[in-house]
Image (cartoon, one colour):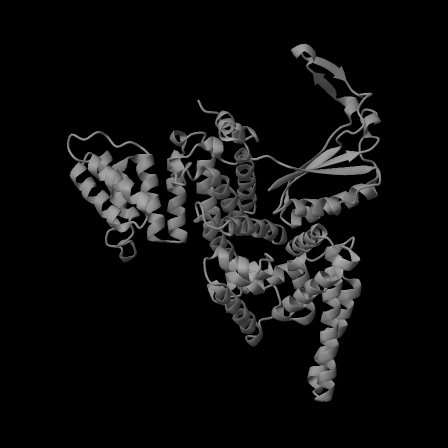
Amino acid sequence: MRFMMLMIPKGYETASPGTVPDDTQAVAAMMAYNKSLQKAGVLIGCDGLHPPSMGARVSFPGGKPKVVDGPFAEAKEVLGGYWMIDVASRAEAIAWASRCPAGENEVIEVRQVQELADYPADVQAVAADFPAMQSHLGGKKPA
Amino acid sequence: MSGNSERAIQRAIDTVWRMESAKIIAKVARMVRDVGLAEELAQDALVTALERWPQSGVPDKPGAWLMAVAKNSALDQLRRGKLLARKHEELGHELALEQEMALADADLVASDDDDYGDDLLRLIFTACHPVLSTEARIALTLRLLGGLTTDEIARAFLVPEPTVAQRIVRAKRTLTEARVPFEVPDADQREARLASVLEVLYLVFNEGYSATSGGDWMRPALCEEALRLGRILAELAPREPEVHGLVALMEIQTSRAKARTGPSGEPILLLEQNRARWDHLLIRRGLTALERAQALGGALGPYALQAAIAACHARAPSAAETDWPRIAALYDALAQLAPSPVVELNRAVALAMAFGPAAGLELADALLSEPLMKNYHLLPSVRADFLVKLGRLDEARAEFERAASLTRNLRERELLLARAAACEPGSAPPQLP
């Protein structure tokens, strides 16, 4: 089963553009944690995200796209990054999240990744091509 | 204690066992130099947790807790051995124990539990030691490295639990009696010993992969377990190209798991699978692992070659766009490295796809005298397919019928008989399933 561990650092919602990790000790601890995920054969991918002040939100009032540049005054919790892991159970995903050398201001939300098989049959039929879209193959496109 | 929190504790214990047992057994085996004893001590630590955690709650670092308990009993064990040795005045033995104690003490104090790689590698090599039968190696690997219970292993391999239990007991005894050292093999033995490890992982994988539908969920779980152990091994032995080759092969084969069967469980052949259902994340991981194998240089080994063949299919956007000349060349390389009639038959199919049915038939015909192929239904089935394409329908029908009489799979027999019937003059062309 695949799970995302979503890192939500409190205060990141107001971080100024260009904010990047600068505490080498904290980064080293996080790298050791990433390494432990990798050595256990469970890490599939991970990324850190630039702060929302560099991003934008697109909403659809009345069905029309409306763009608001970050930071977003109303946002209380924003993503700072994520890990994707492949484990045997929800309990194992939680156990891995619990080992993260996170700070007191940080929360990790553990969420299971949906599989096509989780959908009802009629939805599966419509979404049949979905798995092929989930990552770039690197092969050539059909002629 | 409510049922709910009991279940929560049981779940916490199951989880920590799955995540930590191999490391604990490996560390303790390093101290006591006996994997059988190490496993017992790790199990004892688990029993202690089962007794204490319902009262005390699950500790903050459950893995470290279990490790400390197991290491302490290992030290006790060594001390008892030392007392015993003193009583018997076995001076030599005592000296050896003295050294072991010092080593174990130093281990306990100084060792960083995150640095378990060497011990885990030792454990893998020991569990897959050639002194053990293949079945014993498989059972011991799943037990010691995978943290599976005897019951789970028995269900996965469709054998009675006592059989597995006995295999494990005997395997541990064999390791002790043969005085198999708890070490990573020397350079001169490393290749053969590594081949034994990879064979075990791939056998476990295939046991799960051949269970196409229904049955016990433990069987497909074997694929996940083999893949997980392979990924771990790739981190422990990053300089071994065949480890990456095997991981690549397993990642790519697993990527097809959901496309391999139809709605009612019927098998779907590779070229007829809906490629949109392939797991592209696993394909990408497989291709990356194959690149790691190739980047290490040298000729590709048998696993990397099989992975390269699987990668050709994975890269093709549709069956029609498959690079058959390359697949034929890779089978050629594989046939030279690990010759087998089955590889030759696959090469014949690839040759036919690349250069026409006559090329494939020539090679397939050469296999007719092969004793191992005598009752193998795929040889007449493949020949029949070539003969149809060459317009030799009478011969094709006879071969389809022979293939039907040899297969034990009911669905496959029906399909082969239908194809035989379609070779009758005037019948409609066969429909693909």
